Length: 306
Image 1 (tube, rainbow, N blue to C red):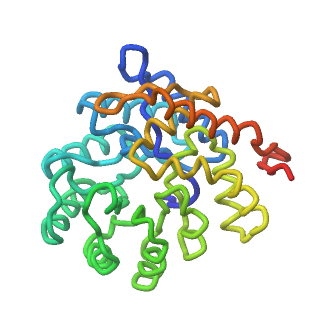
Image 2 (image 1 turned 60 degrees about the vertical axis):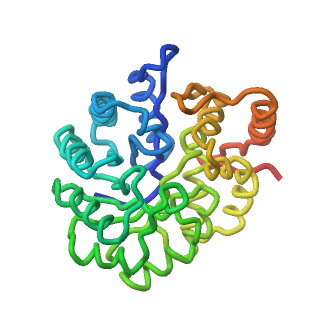
């Protein structure tokens, strides 16, 4: 497993009947890779995994693997109410040809370290696939501390990466201080990407990349290559959109950006509802202002206008 670069946590596209649109999702995966993304992350929070049946999850994994055809790794997000269900989904993902797993704490129950360690360890052991631990205390109420991540890394050779979404860039440097290069660390909060790379992150599980993959890849590469002026110029343009990844309605917002660029639609499954009224108009105004000043592409790279 090659843990680096920009790997979008892809949205799940729904048709007019709110059924999964597998044809569009296959097209979307390849469009993301054509624009420089290095992997595809399925079934995550942005993918509305909690609203999908087990059958739908399996079809999405099967379809993604088939669509990508080995061009890049496909990661399956593993989240469930119970440890047994999470283990079963992990095994299904391996059978369907996924390359790696992104392992979440259980939905709803916010256990102590002993319980959370037991849960994620069971998923790590379920298959030989490389695993990423998803740490998002803001959303899930469970915080995997650097010392606890070190303990897991010492016990599970296939635990290879962390998606760090605590919103605290110091966590990246803290994990690096304890483990060096033992784990690859991905930033999981879009508007913290420059800070995360600055303190040692090697990848980005990105949200706005669903709609703007070229700009996301260039921002990441400029930062990794220490091209600071280019990075900050692009970041300043991108920031109003990147912030959409950090609020409760992030799924609706990112899907709306996709709709505005012509790569997807705004449909979501309940309990989420599409934006309406003043909120919708305010959001569209932000998106359209950004798109009207969208960086031009020169020699394959996004270059902000002066």
